Image (cartoon, rainbow, N blue to C red; front, side, top):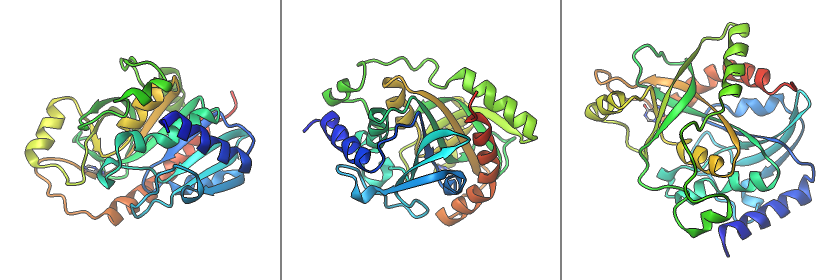
Length: 272
Ligand code: HPA
């Protein structure tokens, strides 16, 4: 069975539970699970129950697809995402997004917890992702199954929607929430960066580093979905600072900072 056929079966199953379409998808990064508390008329579907869906293993991710209403906008939220370091293939990590596309999603918010390479960033800060650098050893569009979702060589010269970014900056300003802007470097993980790698990432233009998001943005752009991305800076990622944090600490900082991101998200998902 092709990826497209599998995605169709997943979408058909989801429609039997929630027949309504939603235009917006949200990938909730570590610590941002609180977003779903703001949704009305929620329908929660465990990843386990959806045919062909991968299942999450990372702590802090519950693994549910959640449908709900925010300010009258219908949303599919992915609570729990799939990482390359968990041994998924990249086409598996983007499978849920392909299903969301079949369910009618046209705009996607991606969020993540990331280390701050920019020395001006502090733990708990937010960064609007203006561009990304792909350091993954593979690409989710490799192989012929990907051609059922879009073109072979999608343009990546501006993967993030500038109009939506302007709105996010405006709303953040109105809310008094500082919002950095910067480039997200996506690495395979799970080991953290050496000092030399941190200097390398900074030298090539990175402001934040993490282990997700990049393949999702590629897959979404191939399908013509508009994307906006936010990083919650959970730790400094500077050559002189040893990294001794645990996943729990990353989640704890993201949880604390997540409230600010929720406010911005509420602001940019208003009906215009
Ligand atoms: N490096 C890579 N991924 C991360 C980090 C980091 O410092 N912090 C949160 N995710």
